Length: 155
Length: 262
Image (cartoon, rainbow over all chains, first blue to last red; front, side, top):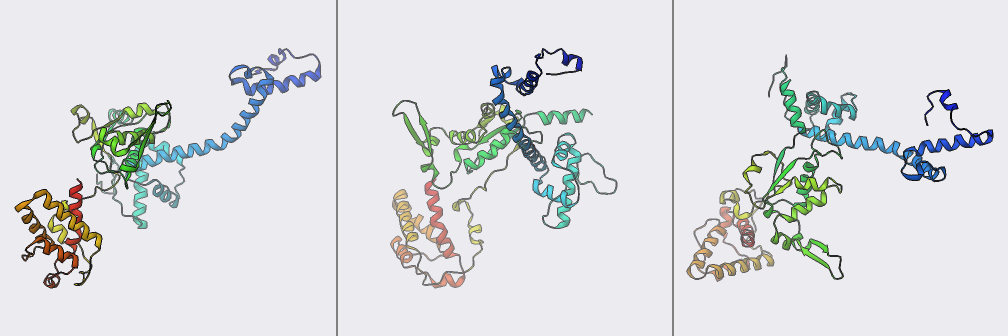
């Protein structure tokens, strides 16, 4: 139910009595929610109202679930991206956090997909940090195809 | 730029992985194989996109089940008719088709959706090391095994056994466990039965040689040897020289056992 202008809204077949007009708007609100349903519950108010309530309940729940699902997906992807460079996901994230590198999972995932060299250098940074902290002894390879100015290029 | 384009192709391509299932737990390895079949090892992973890789499993005949799962682990089937229930032990299934155990394990591990059959079609299992050339040419990398391949005691060389670190020598009057003695006697009997006649004596002597840490002196008969073992007495000379007699004694029967099994 889209009213682009007040002129179009006035073209609706509204009931004549003003008390019935309120009822019309109330029903159209619920039918707007059920506009994408299947079957008669799309158009019949009596059938649409209960699935409409349910849809709103689902929507409330889904607002939270979407964040969790996206977080899980990013973690899986980042884990895969870290494993490509011989790095553990948790170690990677911990060392970034400790170094005050404020990149979240979403940005890191985008980097891993679209800018793999950038991501590799981040992994390399995390490995270097692990070496400096002294928790793990890891071997570091510089990103392929990148020429350092001051540092020796091992790979 | 052209190089970058090729890199992108490699991202979207299906790579082929090799997995050597020699002495690997089928359940542990199935989770690892499924990881690659689903495509969770790629940064572009999505649960609904079909980006899994091919996995070629070799040596599926030589998988090793945990505990006594060969006997205990059962596969169930019901025809739908009354009395149509049947169950098959894992060893029986493995005997019929050596690729089935690992195939079923992977199938159960994959997510239950419409992509499952397609993912299973990308799993190629071979009972032995022989793989068709058209498949072998595709393989570009190998999946790490899930557990270290155990080495049988008879696969160790004598040098390795002798150089194995030892904390102490057994005391002279130390009595070994009865179970060990039983196993030793049984093995010696079975060995006699296998070889028979003159050969058995020589074999026995050889074994004694090894047990006594390469010492030249050997008991004349097998019975005498058994007595020695039962009483648990050992030559003082051997102990004084610090030979690896006790260790070799403890290890050898096991090795025979395993050898017999296989």
